[in-house]
Length: 256
View 1 (cartoon, rainbow, N blue to C red):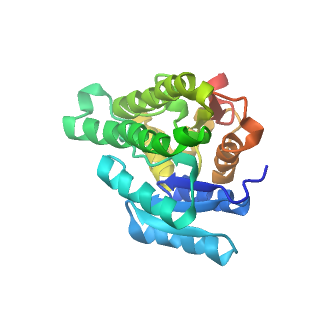
View 2 (spheres, one colour; view 1 turned 90 degrees about the vertical axis):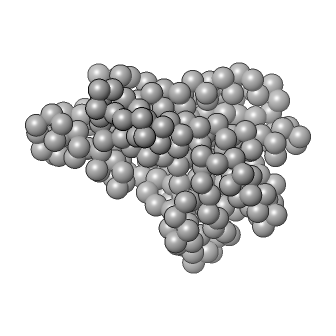
View 3 (cartoon, helix red, strand yellow; view 1 turned 30 degrees about the horizontal axis):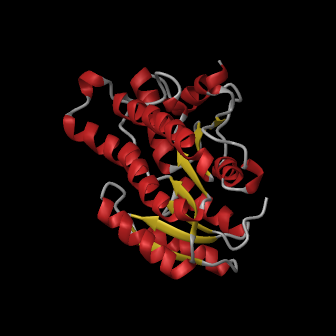
């Protein structure tokens, strides 16, 4: 599953799953644009890739702002070549808050980053991909995008939106050479998800590890590399006939 000399943009690449995905894409031969609101985090990811012999540049991006995305994509194309893989990964959580607990500021923040950010990133990527008739868009959704729990009201709504948007784009662009899919991670050890799991345990009056055992049939969290490998698969030619898929990597939780 090689991705030699293909240019890939990863948003939210400054830490966690975004960093893991950027590094694995580079290990498989891609030229990586590590984009994040955190300039230092993005630069560190790019440095990790370059130190391992890969090619990478870092960029600052605000995924809720179309102009910021446009500048980032244009710069990445100028520096690294034609955009072939877009990984819309940037995201935030909502503290497992239900509707009556969610204020409008939090609602808009989560929807703007987790859903509108995917829309804007995909929209800009398509301007690069459609004229050439090929490309891969991979969106980070969540198991919370498939069921009615796994997060609070804003997060669940946003991730359901990502799943739906992925399917709509897949239908719209499959005949034009663009594969659009998403991954639906369960609990993986990132700072965001660790905080979320602790919040879930607190919400339910149980400890973090008890929450973990109750949450995942496999009894353990997956690794970042498990999710990154799924993203790399969807970004590769091995997934040439995969359109509109929600690839679940969750230790069996949604199978319950």
